[in-house]
Length: 413
Image 1 (cartoon, rainbow, N blue to C red):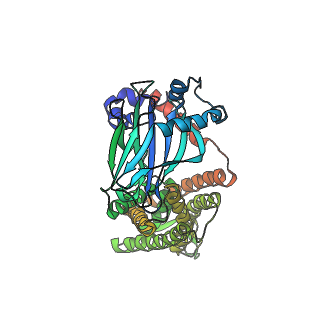
Image 2 (spheres, rainbow, N blue to C red):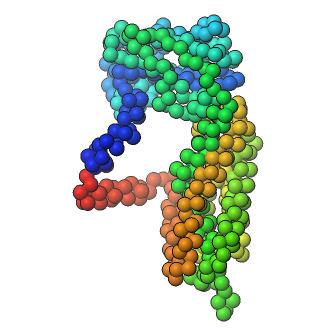
Image 3 (cartoon, one colour):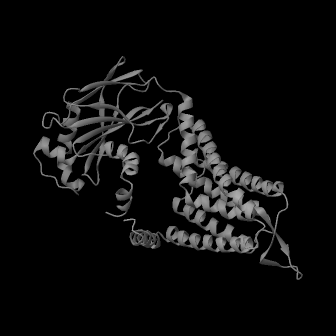
């Protein structure tokens, strides 16, 4: 297995970080109920049961990598079985499970899971406590375990978390109760702030765009005797205030721009094709970097931050869409996510800017600025070609392979 050197050299570190994921991942002799709890739309969910467990119950012989067409003839029986072994109730009465027409196969390294979707009747007004009974597969395998996972509950601050186990079931414990009162608007708002921080930190294209914008923050161009700009003809700013004001101006215009389009897209007022948006975001990195080498906007760097910040906002909106948010608490979700994005980008700038300011007077800084900009242009072109033409150039795969071989050569494997 690739990158096994991490496990060999640091087994305790590996266990510390990944044991929770292994415990709560899709395990063959475990089945799951995923719930999505909405304030106004009630409770939606899905069952997930491994095909190996289905083999135990129905005597079938499904192999790993099974196609849905092979399972489809049994879907009606699987649904009936799950209905017969699951029930929900509360002080509001019984909540009938209404199965949806769509079912699917979730391929997983530890076996394939059949997914059956449903919603619960009479949950438009959420109960305080939800009683759940579940005893699927136990009659065939007493080592089997069932888990109820709260995948989404805005008020609890749970946003698309597939490891958030709320209840567990065993042959001697087939009933349990989940408490829906431990929630508040602030939990949801705080969760959206964290989502914003996280998605700016893992959004390498957004980070590189910011880097391209702030590289020239600690220097200024100067004209030569021919009244032209040289790519290496820079002079350091003399005061921290001048550099800091530059950062504030660029970041402010970037923030204003992406806030506008994030809001418009999230409210379904304006939408653009994802492929177009992602391609332009990739292009924006290269253009900002090229501007560092040869000015395009007559020293008005904020133009780049604002114009392309609009497209970065559409990119952020696609993240919100992937989180499965509905119209409930949409204003607070937008505000929280935006706050998180700002915190995340300020943290990035706080990490980079002091270093740039400290080395600004070095003679190599103008060359460093240009060389880094060239690298950003190359990365931008690579991403743009991949995204615009929907192809995989595989250079990143070769780099990972080279990194692996290097680690192996260094004895880390």
